[in-house]
Amino acid sequence: MGKETVEEDQVRRLVLFGTKGVVMRCRDFTADALTDWGWLPAEDDEARERVDDVLLLVSEVVTNACLHAGGPEELVLRHRQDRLRVEVSDANPEHPRRRQPRAPSLPGGHGLMVLDRLAGNWGSEPRERGKVVWLEVGRPSRPPWRGDGGA
Image 1 (cartoon, rainbow, N blue to C red):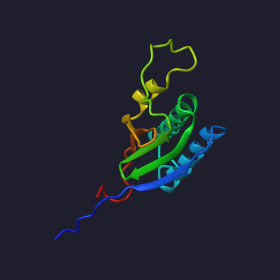
Image 2: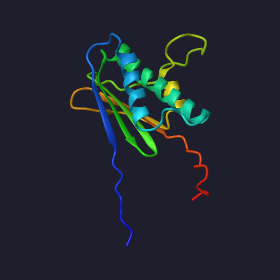
Image 3: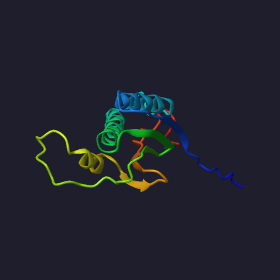
């Protein structure tokens, strides 16, 4: 009889206070976790782009929490073999909403468009106090191991 395995998330949490330097702190924390989980060093261009996308997405949701919600309270990374879920919590109960489209050449106001383009899925959920904005990104496919006969 085959042995059933239950895949569990690996979770990393970073408690946050204030807004000074928080975006870089969250990016560094995420890059360290991605290194531990084998996303870095990237195996090819596709994997490098995916890591860059993840770091940009973390920057966007943390920056939005700083600009619109008084700052993030916690960054949670949930890793499973085929995906990464990023969660940023804050004390503001107002969920992200799309604004009037702006010209791409103008700075600011493009965060949700970035989430739409780069995240596999994203949304927000209420918490007892405030909300959590989350996003999911699939892990890039790995090239087959060389010399293993494709098995």
